[in-house]
Length: 320
Image 1 (cartoon, rainbow, N blue to C red):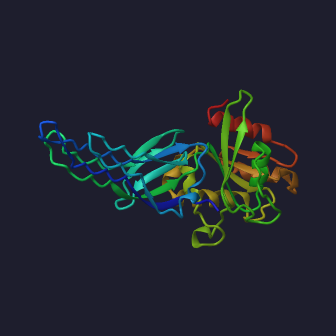
Image 2 (cartoon, helix red, strand yellow):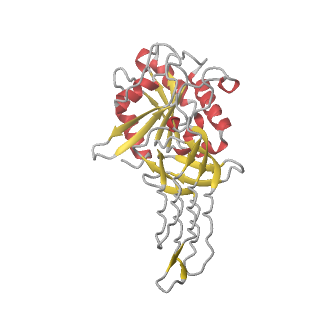
């Protein structure tokens, strides 16, 4: 199961204490020679394509950067604590848990942000200064939320062949079965274009009327559409889970728009799979024409319509 939201407490390292030290000169004068303490390390979050998911952080709860070491005599300054760099997946947003204010969106590989700075090291007494203790590092409760940074999302009713289409386009390993709701977590894949550029696709678990009332997996994964460039509304030419194709299409769109009205702005298209199994393909086409919107009739099994769909996806994602 995809873990896409966790809470953590992070704290910068404690600054090292300044040293209160003296030495006797040859003329017997007492001279202060205590050095400053080192600064504490900071907690830094960095996005990486190679980072594992947020699930590995779920059990840690509390992250503290190393402290700076204390200053020593003979003007020996304390070493600064190393920064604690936490790798997170590209597409992770960081919020202040208390007020839900955004700290930073890490949407590109190697994007990073300092979330909790280390405490400053204390002053030593050299130069007739008063030795002071190191400061505590900043402490903050944060929320990490991961939104899948895919170009194209597949949203559909159960048993519409989303997994089969994902496998055909991306060769992603998808546990597609002959029963509904076989996909229980988002599945990512990459389509390789002829010019070696890539289009990322993501299959979301099935939704249907009643999902918002807790039936099936609900609409918990629809929030990931926020980063998409195109939504494929997947339908089944045999109408296994909808009274009609048009009703199925309107149901999907309604669920998505109710989840977030801003998703109305994301380009979308209806894709009717299993056209090879339809009793009357002509009637399927006639019904889809009622939408007065662009649609594709495909068969993942036979390959019918796949090329036209791929060409459209390339055009919509800037890979034409």
